[in-house]
Image 1 (cartoon, one colour):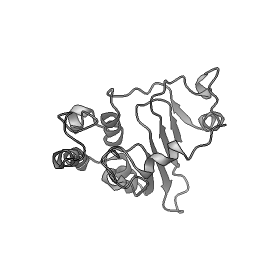
Image 2 (cartoon, rainbow, N blue to C red):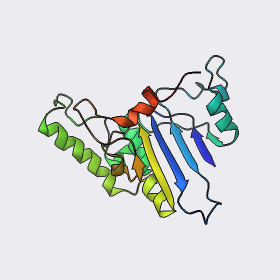
Image 3 (spheres, helix red, strand yellow):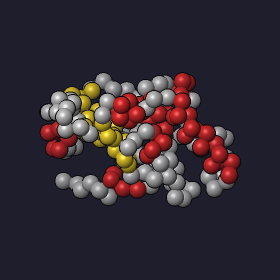
Image 4 (cartoon, helix red, strand yellow):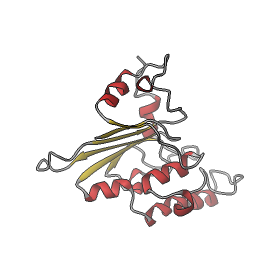
Length: 184
């Protein structure tokens, strides 16, 4: 069972559960991608000071990808690569924000260009869409640059869209990492 991925550039959580009780052999899939951490920043990878007992237990029972590398140096293109299985030059999302950089987030031009980036996902089958074909439900939470969770093909999710101009990569979806986790 795939339950943990130790390195990436974006916070993103995909939970997929079997919809049909008739097929108990299908594994549950939990894909955890963490933001701005090195592959050694967990207890199960040998960090002397950082304690991650829950992740350590999950890692003991799971497949851990110890040589996962980000495809680009930016959050949004990396997430788009993970969800589509395509590199940035293929899916066309090559930056975090629409170009040029001096567009004001409150402007109509910014919103139009942001939507153009979001629409690029429609050109590809995403991981949640592929999982749905196999009978899975999927849930999005965490950093999500593409507006509503449905834009990636998730069946459920927390990120609803863009409630304010500064909410460029999540709204309620970011709460799990900001206030939903208690330190040990």
